[in-house]
Length: 151
Image (cartoon, rainbow, N blue to C red):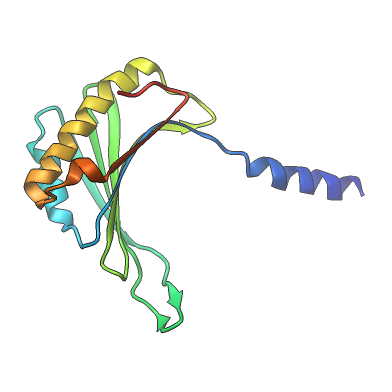
């Protein structure tokens, strides 16, 4: 019986992971080409050591059957002494989600790091607007801050 309670407690506690930091999300109603994201990163002078990784997500099952898997792109970069990343996901409905994030589970990042990386994220979004043709990008950005002060 004690083992059952211990297992139940572990299951409950693992659901309590909390992310602290800064996240910026952009959702579009169309495909954003992954090469323009790379070009946008390359055009921002504060960024170096850009790496790209591509994967496929799971295969969605809908009423109409199996759909094409999500296309996932990860872009890792350095800016000063910080490491940043952008994640894009394009689904079978031809919609792209772009996420920039800086933070960690269970640990609040130093505010000075947030103060350094947030302006770089804004520059990246401006470059994505120019290189990828997302005209109204400012209206699409949803910023979330947990445990830190943004803006």
